[in-house]
Image 1 (cartoon, rainbow, N blue to C red):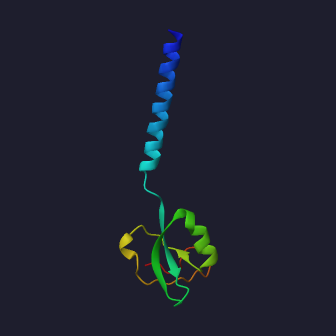
Image 2 (tube, one colour; image 1 turned 45 degrees about the vertical axis):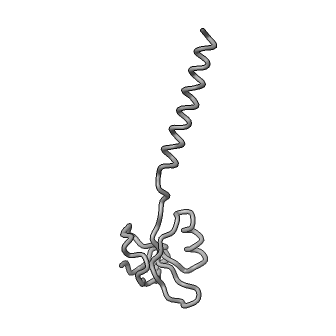
Image 3 (cartoon, rainbow, N blue to C red; image 1 turned 90 degrees about the vertical axis):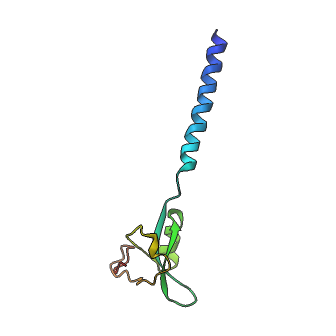
Length: 93
């Protein structure tokens, strides 16, 4: 009887882990719109990047954050001015 109880506990533990991973995997990755300065042309346009890529874009590219989730803005020109250094574009689309 004790072995059966241990077996049930193990099965339910494994099922619980599988279900929790499915929930985590089913969530879409978090994205951020940024005003991205193109290296070759120097012009800026809106792109969508992973939250994981935000620090590199802010540090290395001269980009700034767009306070919007409107994906229709992707590809539109933008102003990458961040005069107060808060990582948010001063002029929002």
